[in-house]
Image (cartoon, rainbow, N blue to C red; front, top):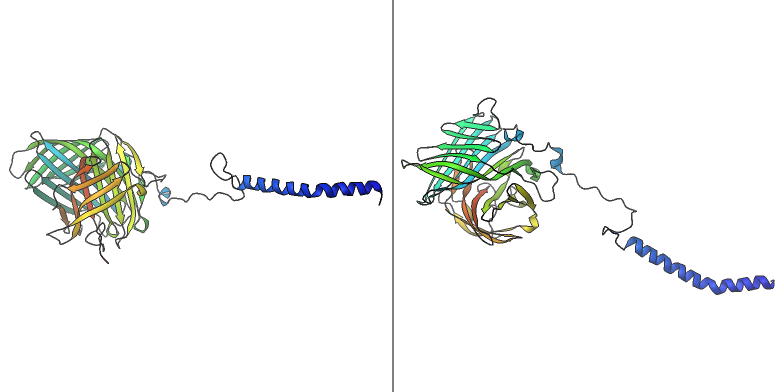
Length: 379
């Protein structure tokens, strides 16, 4: 072998080992940087897999909620317009009420009126209900305008009217809303005003949570009492089946000016479906993650009329603290069996704890869902 070639071979053997070692080290460092070290956006730098597209919401396939057009009745399986609130007289008299108009499509389309009125100073509660075929409303009415017997429930935009005229009580209110309506949605959803109830269907849902009310009430043959107060209004509709659901619904006016809507939903077996929450103030709203809401029932109350068991009170844990919710009148069950074949609890409540205030609670499905929603059962 020529001397020059021998020299080159010797040099190659001398540097081959270190060269291979350095190459392997550089390769390992490069792979670590590409695969494991986060980029500026906090994500890994490798791009060999395309990101998964976000799951498409079922609600996104439906037309968006648009007001004032959607204030009017819809062609849907279920729809209701709902008011609840606390009213006060000039001498400190305290009353509360709820009024609901149900529109139901079935073999025959029919309209149902429910109302309750409570005189808290004298611990007297009155209820009334009516049912009629069709939609008792003037032709070409803007918004909604339901009139039946001596009742009227109407609204268009910011101005609403509620009249209940019964022998045992009378209520006449003019309501106005100084703030934009609140469109509810699930936390993280891109479709405001729509809620997915799973197998039970999809619901449109918006609120005017703090309407300003002025009018008068009369109990029996007593003199009329001028009243003012704050009233929660809900409008909900869609092709969902309410009889397959149970719920605990909280509508709370807090003294710091905040409104809270919390909705615990259960399937027909009493298993939790979802917990929804909306925090609003002067028309501005934000959803509350279900992970930030914990509702616990406290004790039980048994209705002397139906024998159904309901929670006696509640404790709600939220990021702002722990709230205690107590009924102002425990016996607030509404027997709607002659009009909608259902029983439910509907009553005014007091809020204390981290924040104070007043509001309303509705518990539905306790007559048809076993185990009943919100009740802890021993197995």
